[in-house]
Each structure stands twice: as C-alpha cells, then as structure tokens.
Image (cartoon, rainbow over all chains, first blue to last red; front, side):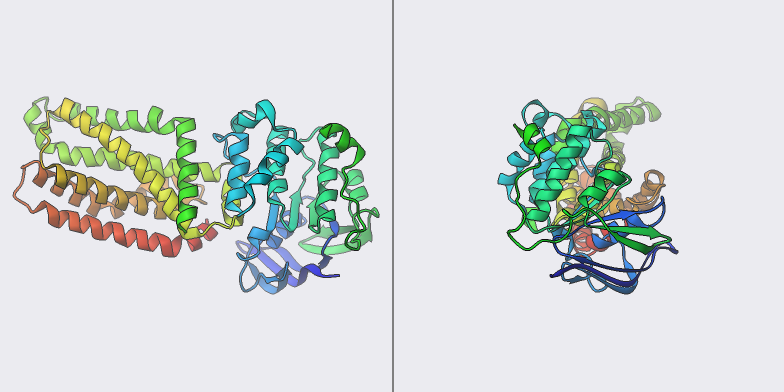
Length: 241
Length: 222
C-alpha cells in the first residue's frame, strides 16, 4: 500500500510556539483517519501542515510524495482543505465560487454542475451570493468546491459542523466515494460516533503529538482497488433522488 | 501566468461589480475629497485650476488606498487567502491579476475625477496624449506598488492603519511625477512632461517586476 502521509519527528511552529512537537504518523493511501483530541491538541495544525500551509522546521514530512521540508507548495494543488472557515467570497454567487475554485485548482469545469447538484445547490441557490447563505449552506458550497476539485488528499476540519442530519449523511457518502475513488481522507471531528464509524483509524493528539492510536470502523480501512463499491449510501441516494 | 492573471482579475472585478463598493463608496469618497479641496482653498477658480493636477492625484492616491485595502479585505474574509495559497495559481499571475483589477478601477475613477476637476475647478483640458500617458503609467505604478504593499500587510491585524503609513511615502514619486506631467500638459509649467512620464514608467516597471518576483513569498508570509 502506497503511503499518502509520512511524518517523522515533525515540528512546526506558529511564531515560537511548537504547534506540532514531534509528530510521527503514517497514513496509507485510501485510508480514512480521524484525529481526535482536546482543543489546542494540534489537530488543525496537523491538517494545515499536511496541506503545506505550515512551515516544517524539523523532522521529516512527506505528503503524496512531496517533501514538505524542501517545497511545501508543490503538494497544494493535490490537496483539498476544508477548515473552520469556508474560504469563500461573499459577493460571488454559489456557482461562481465553485467555478473559481475549480479553475484555480486546474480542475475540470464540467465537474461544477454535478458537484452543485450533489450538494443540493443547483436551482435557485446556484445564483445566490454566498454572503446571503446560512452557515450550513456555506459549508455545503465549500464541500461542493472540494467535490468538484476531487483532490487526492482530503483534509477536513470539523466537516460535519453546521450541517443538518440529512447533509451529514450526504457528507459521509461523499467521503466514502472519495476514498473509493482512490483519495485519502484525514479529518478532525468532535462528532465522535459518526466519525468513528467512518474512519479506519483513530488518532488521539495532545500537546502537538500523536499520543494514541486505535482502530475505527471497518469502512475507513484501505481496501484493494475495485473492492469498494462507489455507490452512494442509502440516505444520500434518497437525498439525490 | 497570464491565464491566472485574467482569472484573478476577472474574479476581483466581478466581486466589485456585485458588491458595488467601488461605485457606491470609493468613487463618492474621491469626489468628496475634490469638493473639500475646493472648500479649503479659495473659491477663486484660478487658484483651484492651478492646483488641480496636484489635488486630482491626491484624490486618486486616497481612493487607490481604499481600492487596495478592499482588494485584500476580500481575501482575508473567511480565510479565502488560504484558498489562494492552496490553488495551483502562479503567484505572479495572482499579483498581475489583482494589480490589473485595481488599475482598471482606478482608471474608471480617474475618468470621473477628470470630469470633476473640469466642472468644479474650471480646468481647461489640453495635451491629451501627455495626460493619457501620465494617467496610464501612474495608474499602473500605483496599482502595482499598492498590491505589493497590500499583500505585505494583509496578514496583520493593524493592516488598515499600517497600509497608508507604508504606501503613501513610497508613492510620493508618483504623486510628484504625475502632478508635474499634468501641469506640463495643461500648460501650467515649462517642464518637459514626457521626462516625468519616463520617471512614472520606470516606477511602474520597477514595482511590476518586484511584484512578479516577490508576491509568492509575501503571500506565504501573509
């Protein structure tokens, strides 16, 4: 199994504070990994480091074959990060935001319309300025941008936050499909029950380090190519219909 | 790089068209500045007409500050700047696109302010070629320099107050050169206006080059 993320004694600083204080981590491609831990444990920093947004000052850090200690920009187009903020432009419409994200990521514009439809953002919402949407709807727009870009590594920080039950189920289906398509997913979530069922591995962080690891649900473990059905989950199928 | 620049400029201009901040706030602000200069100086139109080139470019500078601040405010809101960093866009293309959007906004504003100085100050427009060359080079220089300094302070909490402090002294040569060139075009001085345009051109080339080379690093630090 190819490695998606390999960190060894990785240290990252914000100012002088070590937000990652010697992280050791291996993530295989096609895995779903859940990061858990108290606020300030380093979950968000680990996700941002994987995206090449935090400079690595010591140790090794390799993501999708890119050595982040040498060049942390080259990995970015292959990574999709959904952080606490949605990263959207309030004055642009839903469709314009997703289209800009796809074009800026050198993605296929033809993927925009299906992504909007999947997140129930087609129809009336498509032309609405993002600044007029609710928090949950903004979250769905950001997710639609990720779906349309189809990154190889999904980094999701509290992805279920702000979504209603129906769209949480839909998000779970999207994550399953991403993994079925060969992507890797690392997410931080306080939705323990839901995320645990989804993830193949649970990593507990504290003090900027991975302190504990346990197995999660079976579906997030890496599977041989072709062994995973990409069909949507029942709840999602009902939603799309 | 050019494709990315067009994409960025299109995005920024679309945001301005939808939000109408440039039309509803920046342009009225610049016109108010012109009117206030009229109040501050003598109502005698002769003095206003003599000072018109300088007052015009001071108004453009102030409005340009707002345009640059606005250009980076939309990237700061909702962490859109992270999206730019994570994109596959060439940093030089991002710089050129943002600077081009600011420049186009400023050109529209300058057209409005030109009408303003003609109506309010009684300025008689002459030397169209020199005026247009001055406007083009000064605008490119202001937009490029503003975009460099805009990204430099974009990540700071004090960016709104720090940007004018940093930018206004740096663009003093633009104010000087553009004012002198316009005075020459309007027949108010015996200077060779084209020499001032050359200075403005050098300034613009310098900051466009600096922006292309440094914007990526500055965006990383923002």
